[in-house]
Image (cartoon, rainbow, N blue to C red; front, side, top):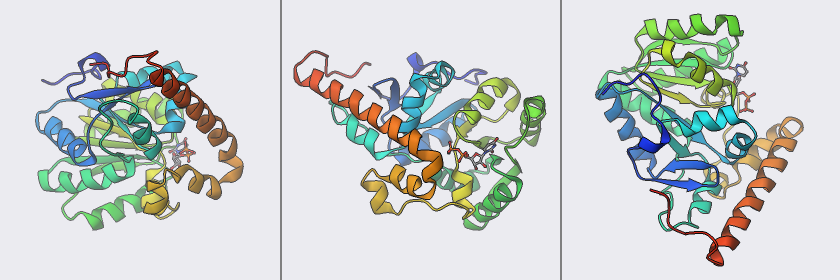
Length: 268
Ligand code: UDP
């Protein structure tokens, strides 16, 4: 059934698990893509949030971001450390679901299914190159439009309405966290698109402006260190704070569980 608001967490359709302050759907990357294809075909609407450790910790001090993720229809774990942490529970997450991989996999399915896609975010040149790359990779991909993510609050509504008028089914917003979440939250009623996903800095990577960590670094849970090495000045404080906070909270949780101070059974 079509709905105009992001469905609250209590009605999550897929099995989920609570890790600290985040509730994650227990879906593999493949299942996530198929669930989004199903929802688009059924003309449902919803937001998918991709959450990594830094975002999970950011949510703790940003009630608006916390609420946005809590009310997202789907939330997936975009980081190996979250998948490891989920093993403290009886029904862990099957695997990491990275936002940047979702873009590729969904574009492939969108081309098959005839879904229209819109890309919002990054600077004008980067988003254009990213769209060209994706169109070259996925023959028949229907790009309803694209636009850069640099605009003031007075332009937000017009940007959202342009997306609705484009008729796009899927919308990727790559404006960084929490900027993209605030935009989606504020403009949800104007956006029109059925499935909306915030994908951080993914367009920079697709356009070749920023390098993604090699797979072995991703599997080792060290993607953050790779990014830190690329932009040490900007990211040092962010990763130092969020990683140590996460480690502290998860260790406390593990100790509590070991001493049966908390129920190991995931909430339904
Ligand atoms: N970005 C944007 N609009 C803005 C600021 C940033 O579209 O007002 C884009 C930026 O070009 C980049 C992406 O958002 O492609 C992620 O930005 P950044 O690396 O600053 O965010 P982070 O991933 O560090 O949170």
